[in-house]
Image 1 (tube, rainbow, N blue to C red):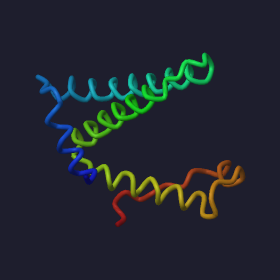
Image 2 (image 1 turned 45 degrees about the vertical axis):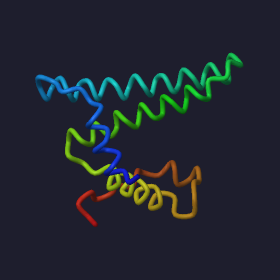
Image 3 (image 1 turned 180 degrees about the horizontal axis):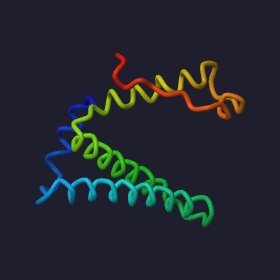
Image 4 (image 1 turned 90 degrees about the horizontal axis):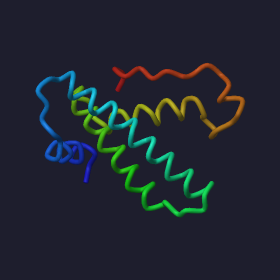
Length: 114
C-alpha cells in the first residue's frame, strides 16, 4: 500500500467535525497523546521490566494515523513530507550521523523544490 492509499483509507475511519478548527485541534492533540503513549510504553518496558513492545507498535500506528489526518487536513502528501525529511537529513549528515554535523546550524529543505 502506498502512503497516499494509507492517507485515503485513514479518512474512512475519521470522525467528521462541525468545524475545521475542532478537527485540527483533535488531530494535533491526538498525535501528541499517542506519542506520549509510545514514550510511556518504552518507559514501562525498560524502567519497570514490563514488556510493552506490542503497545509501542500499536501506539506508533496510532501516531501515524494522526499524522496522516494532519496531512489530509492541510492537503499534504505524506510521501513528499518523508522524501523532504530524508533530503534534509542526508544534506545534514552526508557521511552518516556525526556529532560535529549535528552541532551545525540546521539544513533547511526548500519544500517547493522538486
